[in-house]
Amino acid sequence: MDENTLLFKISTWLLPIMLAVVLHETAHGFVAWKLGDDTAKRQGRLTLNPIRHIDPFGTVILPAMLLLVTGGKMSFGYAKPVPVAFWNLNNPRRDMVLVAIAGPLTNLILAFLSAALFHILIYLPDWSHAWLAANLSMSVFFNLILCIFNMIPVPPLDGGRVAVGILPDPLSSQVARLERAGFAIILGALFLLPFIGDLIGRELNVFWWIVGKPALGMARFIFSIVGVG
Image (cartoon, rainbow, N blue to C red; front, side):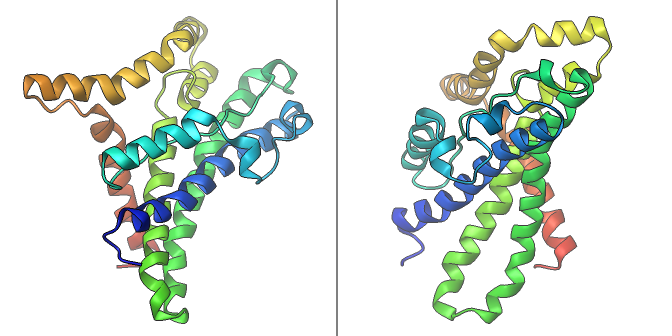
């Protein structure tokens, strides 16, 4: 398959995105179950079956739109959030933090594993190298993007849950109040600010500054750690 075709680019995004978002959400549910809340388990969400985790917009429409608009250069997506009844947890405030961290931590582990798997390419047929290397590269980068993005301290992102759990009560309550407006703030930063920047001739790609650049730096660091040039 020609590496410059849109089909090649989409095929090398699809599997990394699916694995990253499914394992991210499953990790939340699994840790919640171990800490006292079986809501995700009862709803059949402790599974690697992607169908159980698909959000029509976040898992299908949004990534497809971004791939088409950018010519296969960029994509982003998310799965249907795993339900967690925080009041059922053994220690709700502490365990909320552990449940929240489980998703981004899983993505970080996946990024390391994907980078390390480059070492097996020499044992595989030459014709498969380009496609597999592209998949592994995308897996490293996308898992890091998902990890860093979700740790932004704005509810309902995982970083917001962590902030609510570790900050002292007055600050914790103020951060928790952002939950209703959280997605509007995030979507505005992702799409509205860059659009306004284009109109006024300014670079306002906040997503690249906060998430993209750190992910690129971490990817280089991980590749150096696992010995991949």
